[in-house]
Amino acid sequence: MTAFMTLPDARRFALTDATLPAVLVKGLPAIAKDGLVEADLVIADGKIEAILPKGSAPADLVSADMRGGMVWPCFVDMHTHLDKGHFWDRRPNPDGTFEGALMNVREDRIANWTAEDIRSRFEFSLKSAYAHGTKLIRTHLDSIPPQPDISFPLFDELRAEWKDRIALQAVALLPLESVLDENVFGGIVATAKRYGGLLGGATRILPDFEQILDTLFKAAADNGLDIDLHVDETEDKQVLTLEQIAEAKLRNRFEGSVTVGHCCSLARQDDETAKRVIDKVAKADISVVSLPMCNMYLQDRHAGRTPRWRGVTLFHELAVAGVKTAVSSDNTRDPFYAYGDMDPVEVFREAVRILHLDHPLDTSARVVTSTPAEILGRPDIGVIAEDGPADLVLFSARRWSEFLSRPQADRIVMRNGMGIDRRLPDYRDLDPILDK
Image 1 (spheres, one colour):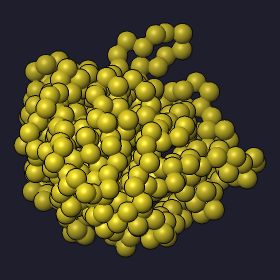
Image 2 (tube, helix red, strand yellow):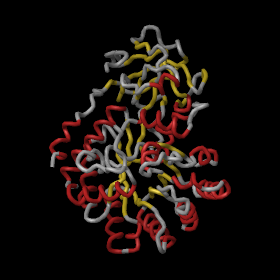
Image 3 (cartoon, helix red, strand yellow):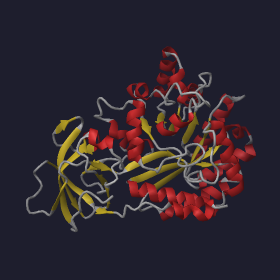
Image 4 (cartoon, helix red, strand yellow):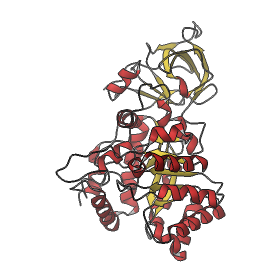
């Protein structure tokens, strides 16, 4: 689909009659309604020179009329698995279950995850994300030895190659039981530190879990590393490690950043338990990212039975308690999620439906922009600000109902004040590694 408008070919120009999500704008003109503000933007030398009230851009300035269309900052995708993406055709998950996903990923990793294989799939996801308007991505990298020795050096290469297009962060996703094996854990910590990564893992009920958490937090503190964990990705209400993680952060006086993803079983608790846990998460200053598409796909999946719940965490309750909350894409076309295209507009649209982020939608745009950017330590991304980079996504949609009813395939992605080539990579590009 062609873009809905053409950007001026000029060093300095204006975007007139634009509609901006007010929660993402620093230095606001008057707010209109539904959390949206009408404005003119002056773009000069790749930056946002001015944010002006609608109709006040200099009359002699070349301009593009947005006709009320929305302007967003570029997106942040803070929980992905770029090393796993796009091998569904090679190793599908026939029953769609969590256990089936674990098994098929393990078998494919052992058989196929060379640097060449991961690079092809990783870059395919980056090309897609860039075309859709993403500027910052955090990916978890499977870190069961010897995989870290392959994946982290490759990640470092790709981070350098893509630094002017997408900023990349990486988390070492390790089996948490290995934390008590000094030889294994010490090597993973060293690798994460060497490549500027984070420590992560997937929690479950384990013997000596308190000791595992204390060892993890101490290693992170001693090496100046942050933590990002997969937590309670299950419908089993007996699994509630989130509370123990909050207690461990407080007990260890850990000063680094801690992020937790999924937290599905929190939604299975009674109100009293849920409130107690949420209060501890808020006190510990832990951030929570929900993965609504993948969670709905995997959770409560039983053959021949319609799912009874949505699989997502208590997003609203966490946000009300003051917890930083965001949503992200998670897996893409792999055994954990058979679909997806690294498109934050899709993630946002589905999150609004699944998590009821609407009525009102006044601040919802933050969940794929400013809040995840803040959690990832990049508050300069995901906002629209004077003197900030003109890294923007332009939409023909004028109001929320228009924005959320179509995939916005005609959007324009602007980087440094210029439109980019939005052609998506062809799936046939992956044939050489998948036809095995």
